[in-house]
Length: 77
Image (cartoon, rainbow, N blue to C red; front, side, top):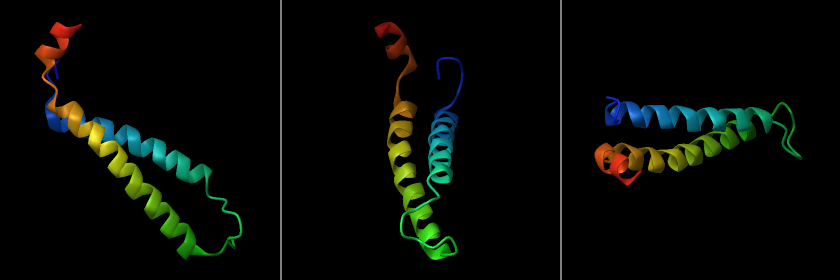
């Protein structure tokens, strides 16, 4: 934000990075123990659950980062 980015772009950047990591984790964890490989409901529910938790876990820090006053932060350094 000190370089000219608005709070909306900061939130989008942090959310994109966090959800990319979640997507990588989901694709690595496609193998579930005791689930048939042709069971799309289990895979879909697991992916949706992980995505919703990841979205919540990345939105909170993104909202905090968007509220930071860049001048106060630069003075603290």
